Length: 252
Image (cartoon, rainbow, N blue to C red; front, side, top):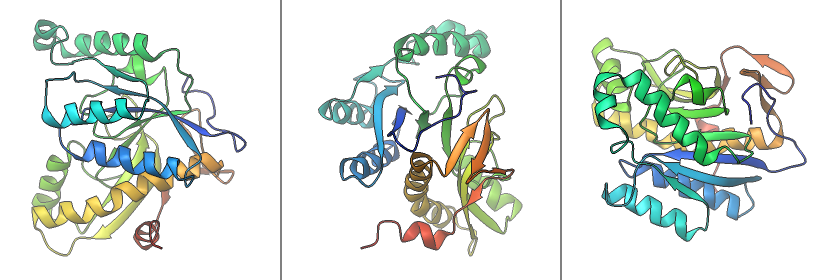
């Protein structure tokens, strides 16, 4: 679907596409968590397809991810970004990105989805692909926090002595990690320790993804022309979800 259209309908399941790289183990954890919620009827959604920018043999974690998705009988498309026009990637990353995403689009263009979830997808999307679908991304920082990988984010937080940290889900645009924010949570930084900051943030990632998809599936949260609407009201800075609420999502 085009990203200019409003997404979801209260009477239908939320239709989801999924992008991952699965360089580490988090991608599969997030996918399994959401797949389990859907399977148990706790999330009114359906995952229509999965795309991964790796092929079998390129990594232990990505191999496991691919095989798990195949066992679920969900359509999965593999296109190795490592093998795709490597010489062009060296000399013109912008052009390479456009060509790679055009190839990706050819693989998935027949699927009608409300959103595509990026969870552990390590490539920057081109403007071309951003305009073809509504992509949402899990980013381990506050809406006004650092850009980049989670490692870069935490290093900047420690270096600049930030007082708080968080996790957000935002629309993917050409402006890296600065698209309109759907939801976020925040917590104070008690100790400037890399591992402890990371561990604290990870606690909220899965439940924030689930909460956001739940809000989209019920129609309380909507995306219209890259604007975020919550219960009929325009959200300028996203919907803050208290961390206590996130930690209670799977209790009981």
